[in-house]
Image (cartoon, rainbow, N blue to C red; front, side, top):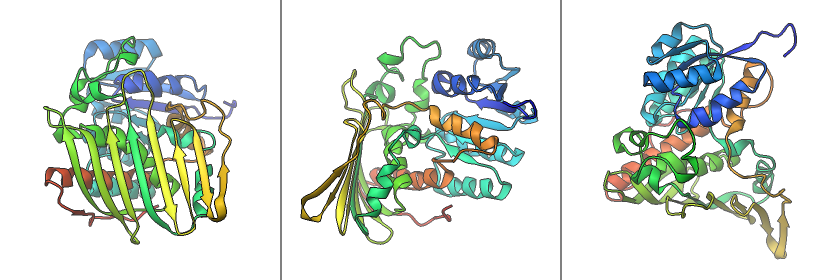
Length: 356
């Protein structure tokens, strides 16, 4: 930070496991940032986090933070709370990072996009893969295959215990602030695999392409608590392309994330496989081009969004996970869940906002 540069004052709303493990350490490592305010339920964990990172102010009621002089806000509360909180901090004039899914209602998702535009602030959705080196190269490959006609979009992960167990996973057991099962296991508050995990893969799809879903027909296999563990859906995109979405928490513990996008156009196809770090373009005549990806480059971590939030507040950097991407994911997920609850009825996405 230069001598003349005003520090960026930050608030974190919902300092649970993920914010404690990722977002707060990222902000704390930036010399331009002052950790002003932290909010979460529970006096003891709130005190622990406030003192460990040196926040100036702590509160259990997020509305108390609205009175503070802050420039950026991270919203990492349970999904059903995102809309009200993100809207309030945008109204306050903050640049906002909101965890994915950005909210649960498609109309509200597009309202957040419009609000950010109206107040001239950035709305960043917490999609970590968007900031990984080389992944954006897929966009140039996709441009070479012509009009997209079919998409396969899949995500598998080791999260069964998150949605139908303790709420956490063994690899996180050593961390002081643990995930709360109620965040992930309440079907009426956005719990379940679709909102919690498949949202990652959809975010990638809508970042790399201009596609937008028009209708969805889905089935899910649910846990006893009512949340989805496995998702299967067929989709029709605006413009006529077809798509298949699938998600599963069935990857055994000890293994990584599986994210696969296969995009088929009039004149070729693109494969993006996050787990094996492959990005392949296939063209007519047996032509095959494969990107050279450094080993480990696409291992999942989520420092990118919080760093982008700081950079954007400083008037630099780019928003690779803007609100319109998040809103397209929300309307797709909302239709998927609604279709499954209606025993596979086709759900048309009718309440569409305008994209950025």
